[in-house]
Length: 270
Image (tube, rainbow, N blue to C red; front, side, top):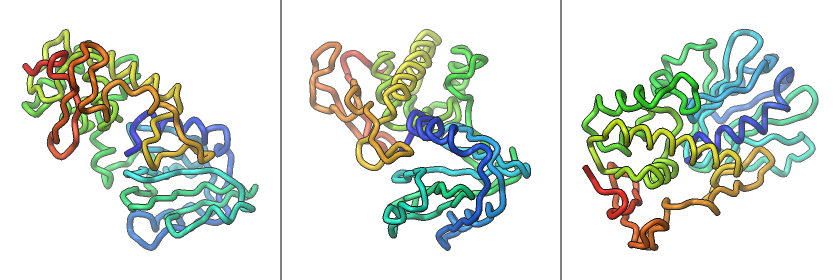
């Protein structure tokens, strides 16, 4: 599933293209998850923002188009002459007056499109209850530690819940826990460990943005190319391989439904 770095990479790719564009035609798959795409005909796009793993397209008429990529969503930008790029997995598209086409392709249909009044996310509970953005200057390690202490669930499960911090998924949770030497299966965390974990989350996600995101299978940038961060992963997906810090084999197990990789030696459970 695209996480914050992938969604931010897509946002940065669309930001120079969409503000000021007016939607001439639009279509959404008849599913309730996509059919609101057609409501944008005639609307002018004002800005392109991100909140956690969600893309928010502000409209001049005080509405917002919300797009969540789900597990296999790909949001691309091209021109109408490239009609061969439209296939049976396209779930929504928006044709601009200048011929540019914004297109959502989603093989497994776990993505979502919604049109809401600006700032009103009550119909999108995960977005409505998102925790702080990891790169917000006002979000401190003490605040992060306090949020983690409110639950007895495993640290990784809390990260994936989006409540203590927004935008973290399976890849960057494993990576950050390894960098911070925090066990993902721990149910308690010290203030010092929380501080290291927040710094690690910012570091691994910042680097991933610089690398264009992680492409393991489906994720693509807005021009259809792959990211490069998969070449730089330190822990995720390396179960059984030597830990890059202590050389002992990395462990893997399913934790609350998600495959989790860590080093039992470097990341002892508390």
